[in-house]
Image (cartoon, rainbow, N blue to C red):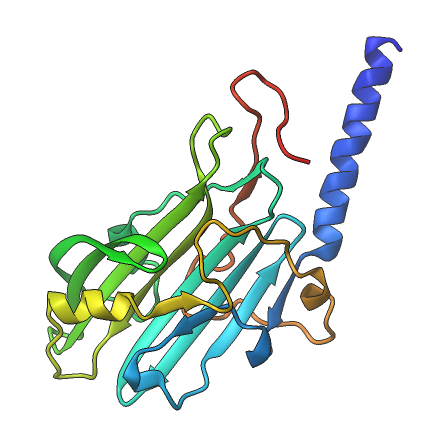
Length: 234
């Protein structure tokens, strides 16, 4: 086959992948029994969170908001397809992520650090908002790094914040304890593989991107080639 023929086939393949991704991409209001992020803080024990999910053939990205007893938390969880050649290209730090939430304006940063949790090591940033009357913590974790990716990017990422009831103090010990109450439903280990639930994307009735984060959906999934220039995974 000549080079022109090979180029045509590559071009058609790329077009097919793009068309497939576009055809199956959707933002949907997520049924409660299909939600992935769990926050077991006492304040949210008897509440029903709001969930919106972006789904395409490469990834899922769930937005979830918890409200209860005056406390509030919003979280975004992104997970790439189980193929080893798909990673997340999310260029955020915990401090930058705090500013992406519409609820956070005129914040004053406090102590920052790292803490171990069931989902791995989280970076956290204490802060206040609402004139100092609302004590909060922002948090972020990226994990399941793909060794074949030259940039060593992760396949899973979670970031968000928690704000205590107005007028209530929130210290570092309380904040790190709360972060340890964040889970992914049905998952007992952090290196699990995941296939986007395209049946969820095909549900009748769309969701909305008018959620609490200015960047949602981030749609950060990316294909990579290994250091030798060969495609890895499926």
